[in-house]
Image (cartoon, rainbow, N blue to C red; front, side, top):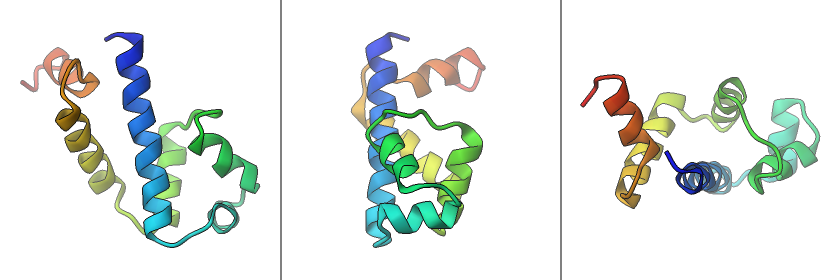
Length: 98
């Protein structure tokens, strides 16, 4: 997987998290409070200054009353819709799922 493909996938991931927060009409400050974190935590991951791990993503989804598995499935669909060199396709092939 090329570095730019990974970066594009991560940018989509961050965009979708921000869209989810905004769709739920939750401010960065309110989400940070729900997570027990400073507002800068939300700001930094939304702009890509700080990377999120799996557990943090699950916590964000829970705070926004969103099913994590559904969120990731939607992410995978959008990623596949972007086409070219999708990291999702590369992993599915590598693990024998395709």
